Image (cartoon, rainbow, N blue to C red; front, side, top):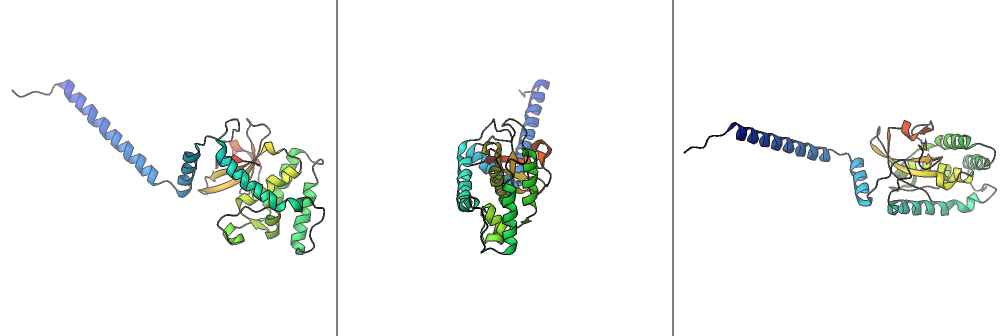
Length: 236
């Protein structure tokens, strides 16, 4: 006897077939999306996977300390290279006239610890360093990656994104801004599709920070910078 397909069975088989097609299509789309990830997106995903990051701009939700500790140690090594100079009162006479002028102008800014409000300090420091030229570490130092001290940055009159952020960070600490209100932030610059670093100032850890950036001269709250996608942050 030949079995007949009932309407119920036919409907069930059709539903299963449709779901299978939908699942296969979704899986194919997901695989295509993964393949099309840009190099910076793949790098960010690897960082997040390795360190289980969940830190955005809100510092009340902290990422595991391992990655931040590594970056803080690198920042400490930068600090070591310029501590002796930052404690002196005179600029070396061995430097060129232009370099000496830049360093002396920087020293004058750092003496405004009590004369300016916090907002004025942020504006002055941001504007001061954003006047310097952008140059890659390969062009500037012959290295793939080099974190310059503020003195090296000013001496070369050029640097890349982390040099701007580091110089602003150390200068503001010299001007009396508490370290725990400052974070150097590794971000994705969405408009450029590349890694970038900025300095964030927090009035409180759970508040929207102000962003000091060399790409955008305006100091804006992070919520007004949708072009920046935070990955992790650190200080030291």
